[in-house]
Image (cartoon, rainbow, N blue to C red; front, top):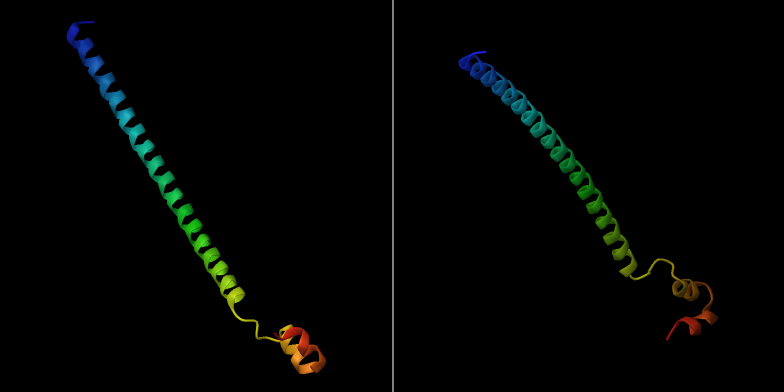
Length: 90
């Protein structure tokens, strides 16, 4: 094979390899992008779930800190049995 023909074959092989590598890089980049988008979606779901849990805990804390006016033992004692008032009043 003459030198110019070898060079031509070598050049064609290099171009072919370059095309394959470019195609691989594109697929690799697309794969990375898809993975990042999937992770972003998962992060969004986790963020929403965390925010919902934070709201639930906040509501529970508010309820726990509210005075117990609804038929507490003191209110029941004052209404039903006057003799129990001495036990529940200070």
